[in-house]
Length: 450
Image (cartoon, rainbow, N blue to C red; front, side, top):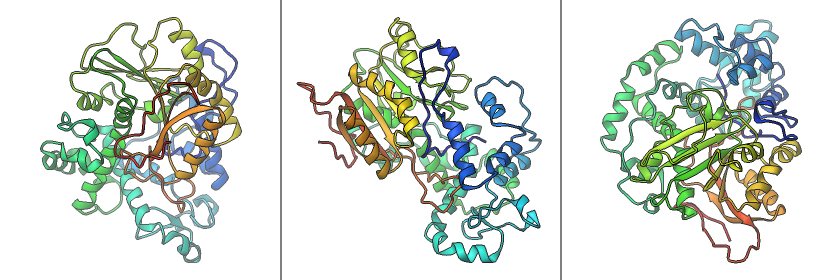
């Protein structure tokens, strides 16, 4: 039940050099910051989450995320239990922030009938909250629906099998263009809507099943959410003019956490092969102290991988430690591109301090780098930080392949939802470097790079 929205937190931190397996994290990591943020908005909510997961402490949760606690029993016996426990973690009054246990009758919380998302402890709180909530009610209805349908990502129903791109990458400007390239799209979407797990979902969630059109749009939004990362990587490879047809290419995802690695399958980035058919091999290595044990927890390649295939792996370490122990010793390939999904550089001073060694390493070694950002405000602060570090900014702007799935700010539901990978920053080396090429931005984006 790991919540995916991490707009106010970072995924990486730094400490004095130790072997990767013994790294001591001195800056706050993503999960601990996330729990602190939850409790600051709704006191006691983190304990509700732990209770629903059948855990007693954050340390127990962290051990489970790290794969150290095997055979954990979440106390889930049926599909109904699973969906009910998830819904229970959203049960608090959106106005006064009270949890059910703080009310005379814990069952008195009532859900907004329009959005089926936020709760109120009484009609007075609902009326007081309505001026704020009415601005977001329709969008929060989409959030509530997508939160349930997202289960089909874990069952494997989403995404549907995709086709090799029939257009050149520079001709694909939007998700509309991408969907237009998918063969038998209606049949593929119909098979998801009528599939076994979709039926199990609506038989157990305790909510009325939406109209087919609403479910169809939800499946499409979740498909964009899944494919946003590999397609954003593809766009960055193209924008930096990295040649995939004469040699294998290595991409490092820096600051990776459970967001990128929980339940990740070795085929999850195969869309890169649909974009670049007949490439010479693409290696994607996810590096971070919060990566989760699983199928992709395997060593990076020391020799060229198979042509026309994507090799996905993860490595649990701080990126500077990974660079020193693996890249400099030639146990891992030097990256052609580094990507950071939502590093949260703006979040707080400790987070920025944690990222500083990585940012300087990428700058000084002139590694083509792309970061994704949630909002224009975060974009503004992140650009300021990078420019203060004298990093060469080669492009920034709105990402045409941002996820279309709205993400609710978990413990503050009446805050405008955000979208994963909504904005991007591209950088390459030190500012003012002679003969530095102007890479431009991502095709289809409203680029604001100089």
